[in-house]
Length: 72
Image (cartoon, rainbow, N blue to C red; front, side, top):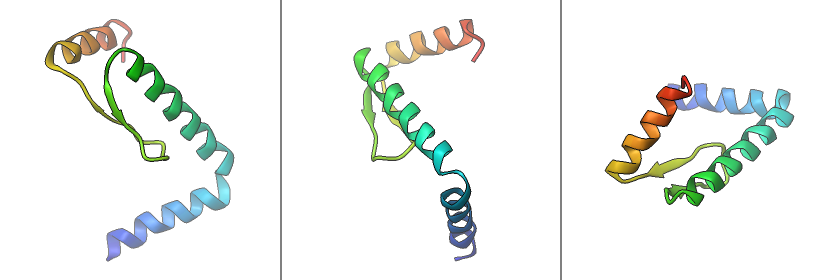
């Protein structure tokens, strides 16, 4: 339970002190999900700022190559 308390404390702090930033994170996640879907990625998003992306092997190689070229 200790870990759950630490995570809960972080969430409470964010809600009390960073609501505007949380909205920005959610908006960025929504935008990224749209972009990834547009190139054929299977994206799951549950109204959070987290994305779960599933891509095929070739798509993964191309994505990794693009990230390397852009310095990510």
